[in-house]
Image (tube, rainbow, N blue to C red; front, side, top):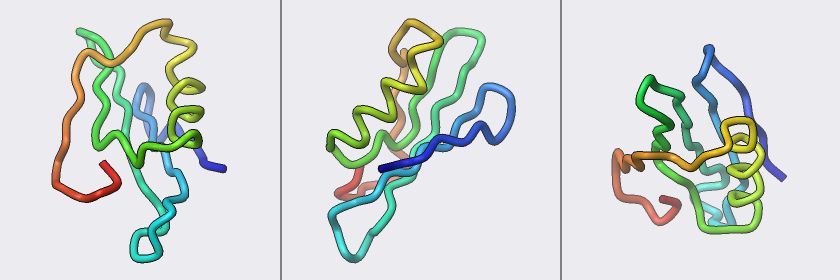
Length: 76
């Protein structure tokens, strides 16, 4: 389905399979900052991505205050 790894305290790597052959994995980051959550490269729009985001956001009881796109790909 997908995976979440806390790579450092408050920094999560989210990886979700993509339906695109040329990009088999979509990687996103969620960072807990002093002012709230930041989502970097939100991922391919799918149920898997949505489920993974809900899982990692649940303990915080909130949504990201900022969404940052670092580059333009179809997966984010």
